Image (cartoon, rainbow, N blue to C red; front, side, top):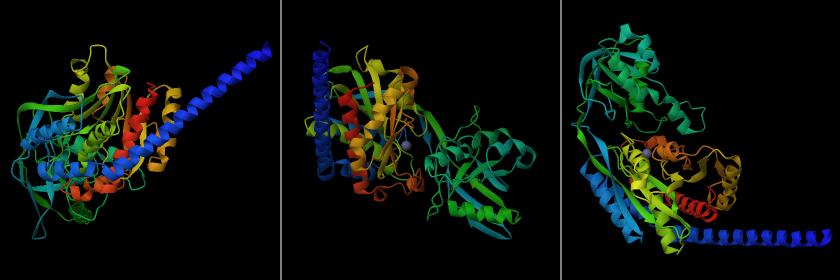
Length: 463
Ligand SMILES: [Zn+2]
């Protein structure tokens, strides 16, 4: 009897092994199909050209943002989305106004600096005020007396020793995010910061969101191009007294309405399990928002396009979400989570979400964020399928600003596409974030790996 059972057991084991081997072979050959299709007939690059050159920068609330919404909705429809949803959300409506100016005066000389107002700051003037140099935002409170009535200049740099540029950005970002509010609170006349970037070859200033105090005190708050920041820092180190005339002209109009654009493919087996893939449609107003986040937008659209072109009917429902207002409010991501069940069945659940918002560079890895270690091992193993195409690792650092609210509300597994980050902060939020700085092959490799990964996530459906 025992022998008979063990023979049956071995037979079953062989069968299971054979079936999983067959599944693996099917996966490998289907991913090869995806790869060939994206690399030879992928539309991501031409779509990015249109978004960057024909539509351009898409600051929340401006006319181009609405043009981008219509373009994206029409494109998703033309690629065969089962339906396209325009999900409304209320957004802040910040305007830069006339171009900001900064002139410094020292030793009888005057020099104009390359500056950009920080997003969400309220315009103001500081004329002929002394510049006080500090390292970071926490130094503001410690130097209340010396900064009163003067312009604070925060010089904190990216740590060159960090391999991850995103980590460097995270560690330095406080000077931009919190600097304005603290400068106003402690009576400074204005704020200047070193741009959040590694030393690039140019002198473009890099904008980005800053917090203002609840009274929304007008205060000129700007970022400096890195060469100008170096020059100013050197002069101040040498003990030179410098005054500056700084003016910004930004203001808020009343909140307005924008839309998350959502392309849907209904799942054939588990239509109430939703896999979300997205990037953000808005951008800052200085460049064309090509890497940030035009790349994520065209990556995401390509997933739907490839599934339809290759005739892959997903088991779960796929939402391609082009989020509104990531840059200066995060209202699109919040609205998608808050109102999730108003665009799905009442018992539908977002089981997995991937965001691409790290640029259109060469793929390196994908991060996932989940609690169950067994499940983590499953996702980590999927990198075996992707190594050949450039994703060599699946790590535990997944996530994204737009999909964060899904995890907080539903416990969704989060995932982030991680391309090479060494050049990202050269162009991030600057006038140099243009189509010409996105490389076609690198962008397509991103679309390929994201499409292949989402296929595997859907096919194995382990959530
Ligand atoms: Zn972004």
